[in-house]
Amino acid sequence: MGVVYKARHRSLGRLVALKMICGGAPTRPEQVARFKTEAEAVARLRHANIVQIYDIGECRGEPFVSFELLEGGSLADRLVQTPQPGRAAAGLMMTLASAMEAAHSAGIVHRDLKPSNILFDQEGSPKITDFGLAKRLEADEGQTVTGQVMGTPSYMAPEQARGRTREITPATDVYALGAILYEMLTGRPPFKGPSTMETVRQVIENDPVPPSRLQPRVPLDLETVCLKCLAKEPTKRYNSARDLADDLRRYLGGEPIRARRTPPQERAAKWARRHPTAASLVALAAASLVAIAFAASHYNSASVQRELRETARVAGVRSRADRAIFDGQRFLAEKNWPEARLLLSNVLTRIKEESRLGAERARAAELLAQADRGSAEQGEREAERRRFEEFLRSRDEALFYETQFTGLDLPGNLEKSRSSARAALGIFADKVSAGGGWMLGPLPGSLSEAERSAVRERCYELLLILAEAEDRPDDGLAMLDAAARLDPTPNQA
Image (cartoon, rainbow, N blue to C red; front, side, top):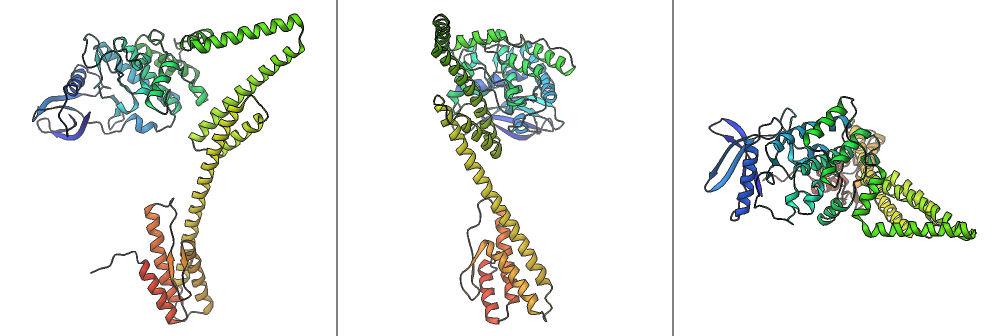
């Protein structure tokens, strides 16, 4: 909706960030209302880690807001799928939680906290920005209605994803802070589907994968803090952003945190409430297993006992295969082709005779094919890189011999220069005639434009070297003609 300019505030004499509504089309009332909401929200806040507002006004009927200029980049720029050390992540999150506590105390809920809305000044101090979706707790705003989803799916709380705007409280921002902490610890947000709707579905229905499964070095206490923020029910999260900041301060100080991990039975109960159909099937399966066990013990049926053991064995194999496939997907995402191929090949070997694991075999085979393609493409790029390096080496060798020319050169020296120049040319060019004609072939796509230019320039130099080293004047002239066709410099009028 908005566009931000770097501008100079004349009366204040300093550089500022000037935010206006995007031009090119008539401004809609809801845009103006949301723009006004952000200005009013920020104007009410006074905190070192919340962007400052300098001025509000209009220019030719278009509203504008003048903010402090932050030129240190965003948290999103710093993450780029790279996990951060636990203490650094906890320290930054403690600062952000303290800033949001100030906003909540002023009656403001942000509703769109995410890494790209965390900017840094030139000293590296973080600032929370973009209060365009902010909600005033004491006001019943008309910008959104029940059922309208506002925010960024990967960082929005379940109540926000369901469009229940009346249920949005400071706990909604606590969830978003937990989602940012999760991405800092693992390199990815807690939920990220192939589409927006799939991401929203995951936010509402799924529990996040514990960070330590994705990054084993994540400290247990910090994982507990993160997962408490990401609880589906707002009442299960921290009571306030201040409580979150306090627990992070305890973690950094080496003190016991107050958050506690969710007991297994509670996790199972929550899963059953979110997936009643699946829970019913599990309960039915459990009841069936009990009945089978009872029948087996009552009738001493060896066949039933064998089936139970086989079912348990297959379940164990499936569980191990699923974990390995998940790790294989992680290696693929990291472009670690050798590890992905080794892991997925081992999975296929272990389950190739398992008739009940057809879906797992198909998934592992599909991922292995992706790893093979990635490995082949990487090998091709490395081979092209070796060709380029060999070209440079041969060109340097030819240039070395050429510098030895005195005009009274021995045939052996001339032949060394010719052979080195031809070897270098033959890597990227083809000889099209016996009289010295050479034509540059297609260059590898993995080379940069600068490297492509370097190849053309050096082929031109090599043809000049060949022309000078030729025994016969006619062959030398033919080589100069070929060089003229490759001359990388523009013709001068």
